Amino acid sequence: MTNTALTLNHLSPGANLEGYLRAVQQYPLLSAEREQTLALRFRTLEDLDAARELVLSHLRLVVAVSRQYLGYGLPQADLIQEGNVGLMKAVKRYDPTQGVRLVSYALHWIKAEIHEYILRNWQMVKVATTKAQRKLFFNLRSLKRALGADRGVSPSQAQSIARELKVSTDEVLEMDRRLSGGDTPLQVTNEDGDELAGPIASLQAEDADPAEIVGRLQESAQAKARMAQALGQLDDRSRAILVARWLHDEEDKAPTLHELAAEYGVSAERVRQIEANALKKLRACLTQATC
Image (tube, rainbow, N blue to C red):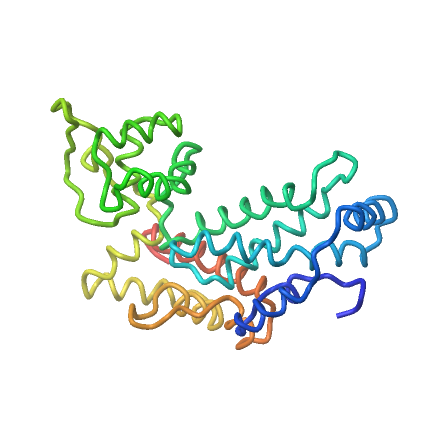
């Protein structure tokens, strides 16, 4: 890595997460004056050394933010990599003349990238597709803890959360069921006995998410053959990456993007691209009559 080169590969934990966490603590924090000087140099002169110092000095911020999202079951190394992408975007767009410190400005970009990554990959299920659902997805857990409702929200608690987030009570209850992953009644009623929208109100769409398609196909021998046929349409590397990341045995831990990158001799970003393309092809094959 040269002094002027700042690439995603050098800002990712790789397989040695503990070593990375120790390393980011070695980069010194910047004073307000130093930060402004560097930001002005990058903004006016496109000085990449200045940008590099700005990014490296804020890597520990990304690590801190990533810890807030460990409850979603995704590798912290991947969360950090996505957060670092957001950090670099923030540095690129940061205007030091606005009187705001980079740490405050960067938080938005770091969280935005991590949010998008979680929504794309959390259990391969798109649990949050609307603005209201996204708001619930990332805030419901903390609000439940504040209300002492770790095991599920009551209708009255759901109403309180709905007011706080400016969403409907039905949306709160539905997201709570999705995140809890437990048994879900076909029909739900509130404290007044009124029926609420439950799973019975939304039948499975034909163009369902690949994860749901995978689950149905694996229920019979014929379906398993269909899955094998679909996977057979992928090249060896794409198929191996997809199986390792999403179709592995539950007892096995899914490898991170960085571990696969080291195995195949490519960047973690390239592995992610291969994974996304493989999922797209798999969905197309499984939703067609023939592959």
